[in-house]
Length: 82
Image 1 (spheres, helix red, strand yellow):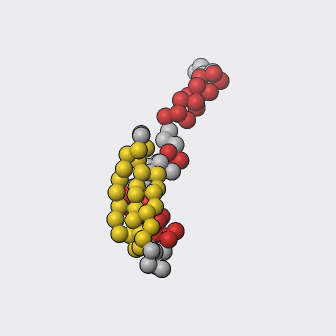
Image 2 (image 1 turned 120 degrees about the vertical axis):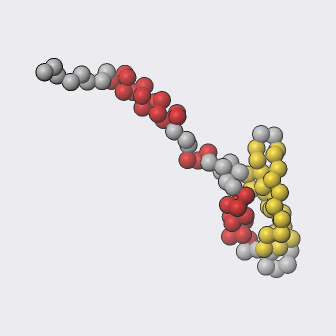
Image 3 (image 1 turned 90 degrees about the vertical axis):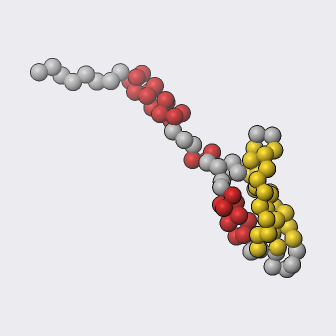
């Protein structure tokens, strides 16, 4: 019975490199509108009045209007690609 062939180190390196580029980057995940709203609510402790999805250049931005606990209306913009 012949001995098993070992993979050439260069092939292994190329495979690992290709897998790294093919795998989705965890930091490039896009926030949904619901996630952006939850983030703004947590940061402001306010009530969300409206949400708009805008495209500025090639970026998606959520424009969220919030009523703060002290009665002020604030507009917060959250980039989707966080």
